Image (cartoon, rainbow over all chains, first blue to last red; front, top):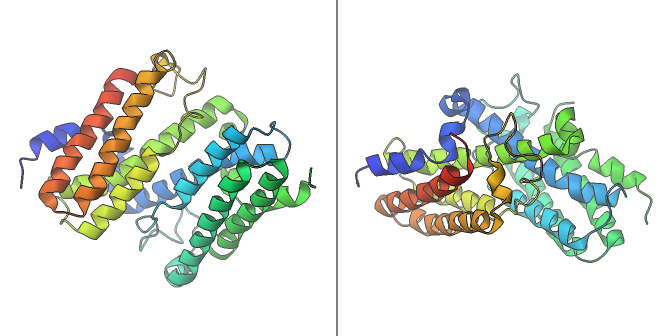
Amino acid sequence: MRHIRPILAALAACAVVALPVAAQQDPIQNAIGARKAHMQLYAHNLGVVGGMAQGAIAFDAAVATRAAQNLERLANIDETSYWIEGSLGIEGTKALPVILETPDDFLAKQDGMKTAAAALVAAAGTDLAALQGAMGALGGACGSCHQAYRSR
Amino acid sequence: MRHIRPILAALAACAVVALPVAAQQDPIQNAIGARKAHMQLYAHNLGVVGGMAQGAIAFDAAVATRAAQNLERLANIDETSYWIEGSLGIEGTKALPVILETPDDFLAKQDGMKTAAAALVAAAGTDLAALQGAMGALGGACGSCHQAYRSR
């Protein structure tokens, strides 16, 4: 093993050290925080393409494509480390414990998000009508997971 | 334009509606929140590969690769919408206004992060020594941006 001091020094520059202490030390809070951060980045980008689909923002193919590509990259992030034992069905999260009981279905729903996001990338570069259609499908992908796995 | 009611209904299922109201309504707070969420996801994944590099977690090539691939996907997210006019040099963020004055250098440093994350993916599938070397480089990429563009 190499000397770890230089590695520690280099890592001190990374965002790790900026995390709230609770999230660093408690793996459950770390996982819940990561899920919420991920959803927030979905929302940040959905605000752009959703705003265009609703007519609140003028359609711009380049800007829409950028947001759609971001959504696709987010959808392809592996979430294994988010949905850990003990992090579901507790205060501070709406995620239901059934997620860990039906992992195949949960992953299939994530795949649905990947597919919808990929379709959105293509649609975003086409025109507003295409974007609106693809946003409907993406909303369906959001909903199918939230309905099954998030408490009301 | 299609009817937007079904689109709105579908989007209501998405994370957009779960965002804090302030972040939804205020584009500045939305941008700052997205930056912090992005950094939190870096930290979440860096905790895995950093823990292995430091010897705090046993090296596991598959788990390390998963975290490294996530870091690479995050590094490739387009951040144009994060660093907007008015969102720098204000309370609640350490990001410096100089970011918007030297966009080429800022983007070059982001490219450095992409390169380091791609190298980490390859190293994570190799062995611990390779991972440690790649983590040093990744830490350097974090640091080069933070030193230039984040207040102390």
